[in-house]
Every structure is written in structure tokens, then in C-alpha cells.
Length: 83
Image (tube, helix red, strand yellow):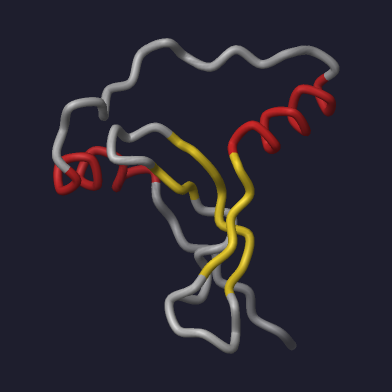
């Protein structure tokens, strides 16, 4: 879907395992993602120190519907208009 770039990719436990980078324009439903360790490495370098993720996962053990309901307040869409 348009606008998904930059969005998180979750595993079944609600852990962020990547970030959507883009899509294959010649295939339906095919996207590319950056792996979380790559993103963390770039962020560590940018702030000049290792970032330590929170040790608790409030999505762990919830079914997918409840996970989505829990993260919904943090999801937004940015729309850019060209002049």
C-alpha cells in the first residue's frame, strides 16, 4: 500500500524485526524491508553510542488483533502534496 515505507515489520510476538523500505512495482503485495539489526547499527552510529531497547514487550502473547489494537494509537499517515 502507498505510504507504508518507514513502517515497522513485526514478528508474531510483536517484536519489531524490520522497517518497510519500498515495494516491487512489478509484483502485487511484494515489499522490501531493512532488518532491525541494520537499523540499530545505523542509529547507534548516529548517536555515537549503543541504544538499549526496552526489555519488556507489551505485545508478547497477544493475538494479532489485540496487537494491532494496542499499536493503533501510534500509527499515522503523512500525506505530501506537490505544488
